Structures are given as C-alpha cells and as structure tokens.
Image (cartoon, rainbow, N blue to C red):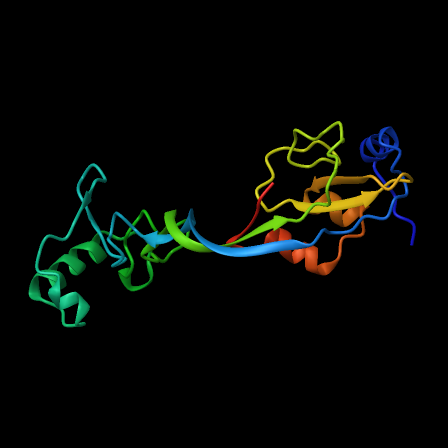
Length: 201
C-alpha cells in the first residue's frame, strides 16, 4: 500500500535522495542498569497514609505520634484521632476517607503516591549502526529527524536505509511520523512507548 508523506517529510527525503526507500530498524543491543527515572513515590504530604490534616492556611500538619502501630495495622489512639480530624476536614470525599490534597490528583480519592524522581532498573538499548552510517537529515538536531518536531516525551525510534551506492542513512523518528509515513511495525510502536525502556541516541 502506498504511503502518503506530508510535504515536510517528502521534501526532507527528496533532499537526501531517499524518497521511496525501504526503511528498517537496526539491531539493538540491550542491557539493564539503574537510572533516575520518573516513578511513583510515597506522597511527601501524607507520607503514604492517604490522610492528612491541614491548618487554617491549608498547610499540612503531619502525624507525629507513634508510627509503629501503622506497620502492624493496629491503630493507636493518636492515629485514630488524627484520622478523625483529617476526615472531618475532607471536602466531598466518600466517607471522608483519603483527605490528602497532594495525592488526590483531581480525584475524589487520595492514593498515597505521587510522581517523583527515583532510582529504578531500566532497559537500555543501543542501536548497532553499520560502519559509516550517516545522519544527514536537515532535522538531525531535532527529536524527530523526519519532520523536525521537538519535545517528544516517548522514546524515538531508530530507522535506517541504504542508498543506491550502499551507504547507510539513519534517522530517529517520533512514533507518529514512523507510524504514518514509514510503515512502522507493531514491535517498533511498542518499543517507542514502553515505560522504563531507554534508547541511546
């Protein structure tokens, strides 16, 4: 099936004499390593317990009693009183439960977790480009080498092709361009959006 290119992508490929070329993903070498990534972390306001008291100015009042009861699921009198006060101040929450404002995240329920930076094991991929591979796109300094888009938050996808002389040309593509214009496979789409998978450029 013929693929219709946008004017911007078509002009770019014409300038490289690669219009109509067959593109493919290179072999990728994988490894595991620890990196700082965006993960769910314990809410700093309620400390993961989902209920939090607030003063008249809306500032969180942390629970300062004995926390040993919390890990064994036996509520101390201090914690029971704290929860009662937290529930009494909750706005429009089911049974008043889950009153932490920080981890409500627009919901009627507090989750005890928020997005933050933490260390986690990620899968890191390094494309094995053939010797002499060229990145000749006019948009080679952008996130997507096909259309020049920046600010892409998912993985970009490595693709390569060969010209009539046998020279390998490569580009990193945003998943939208790769899907629309380069007949990207389902495996590559999954690769672009898989969490905790990083492709080294």
